[in-house]
Image 1 (tube, one colour):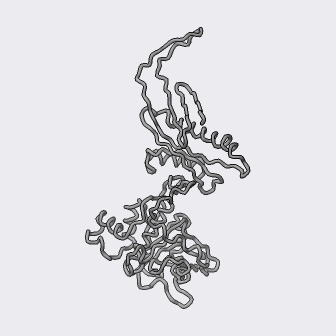
Image 2 (cartoon, helix red, strand yellow):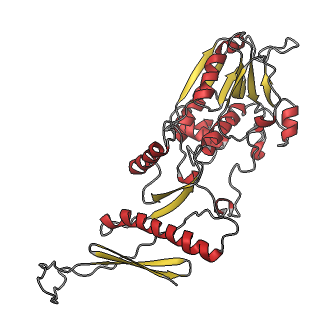
Image 3 (spheres, one colour):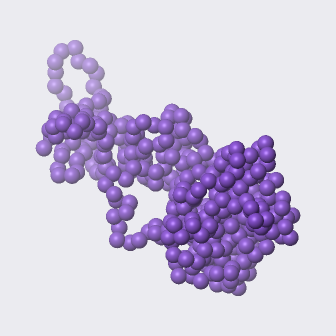
Amino acid sequence: MFTLLFKEQRYYLIFFNRGDKIQVSFLLNKSMNSVKPSAPIAEYYPATQETQLLVVGHKLEVLCYASKDLSLAYGISKLVIPALVDQLHSMRKVSIPDLLKRHPELHPYHFLPPGILHPITVLYELSYGETELKQVETRRSLHLRLGLPFDRPLLRISNAIDIVGKKHSSNLVQKGSSFLKDVHLTIPSSGVSGGVASLVQGSYQYYHYLHEGLDDSGWGCAYRSLQTIISWFKLQNYTSIDVPSHREIQQALVEIGDKDPSFIGSREWIGAIELSFVLDKLIGASCKIINVRSGAELPEKCRELALHFENQGTPIMIGGGVLAYTLLGVDYNDASGDCAFLILDPHFTGSDDIKKIVNGGWCGWKKAVDSKGKHFFLHDKFYNLLLPQRPNMV
């Protein structure tokens, strides 16, 4: 058991360690101020207001680096306790000014953003939502101080380091958790001589026909591409919503007035325009749409697509005729114009065996015209390309 006593101006903080909790008592001076005496005297000034007892709980959690041969007692006394004291000081600075008006819910989170060599700890006030302006400005200030980009969430609670494995401690299976991720990482090269590959940035899940027991063969490819795109936004922590089902996608289109109520539960196709509506409604993401009159024109868009993957990094949906694909990247030779498209095909109906998917060409590089003269993109069909934009947010 240990006691820490802090005194500053007109309040006292007394901390008692009881098991896993520290009881914090704030003793606020409510007495009248006296004139400084010229000689030692004792005077009694009664409080002008009724004493108020506030009980506020805060969680303390610190990360400390230590060598393997450091003794436990030394590590606790020289590393853990000083770190806890520092964290208490930080909480005090936030809590004291408005303690009588509100009870801040402070919680420490640890992050390891890219480019930072050691974890950082941030105190967040849970009474604010993650998208509330005050919380956003707090994160923006931290991004500025740490030199982090301002167009991606790196310090949200969902980005925090999971020290004790609590995120997956539930007996419930998280929706979409069993889906294959980042299947393109194992594919061979594109075969474009002197090309520069521009690829999707970050992780995604592979959604395809027959997933989750739904037989959507022949009509659900655009739905599956949309699910893959939304999984990217979720895994990059732009949204916390579950990847929507086909019915939930249809419900969203009905709610915005794009479809009649009879659309829910149907097997009607959707395209790039509908996908843009759903992305805007469900996660607030805007989209750019590229229209081409024929599949023969798609190679002309490779430079623009490469810029998208370099700047935005989101998966793209390509829709043409009755087919839809997910585009994960392009390999483009600016001098020769030779190019290849990294296609993730939602028409796959087999089990989630990554070797079968890659060897079967369900995820791989496709040229507009292959070595046998076969056209991957049809010349007699128009194509719409949906380019989701990365939200400018932290």
